[in-house]
Length: 178
Image (cartoon, rainbow, N blue to C red; front, side, top):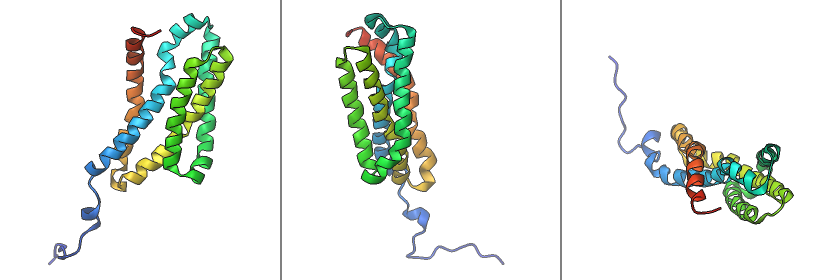
């Protein structure tokens, strides 16, 4: 004679008290949009590189070196981001990364020499690399552990969407700007 487990009146199980996933979507989309903008800031140069090569008279090697500088900065920043976020926290690290990416894109727009552009690309990579470890930590702190798979999947839409949007955006903007 097996008895089915009975719910006790007045007690709430852990599953009932956990927040629904829909209450967590807003902050997740906000983090995803920050990631998207930082990612676009890093990869927008790829579809623009033929025009940049022509305008600045760069060789393919010079253009490749620019991407090497971004990647080098990103690599160093990913490794060192833990040292920064443990001192100032993940939220401040995300803010610093987002602001620094914006500032570096502005600085890159006024660079005149190839060396200035290379240093700007290195600094852009450094700024962008700060985000990812703190972003993932923030996603897992926002979402209930039952929903981590969904939350990370939403967060990881940013780079995939960026690979589609970057060429379209650059083509659209090249019609109006140099």
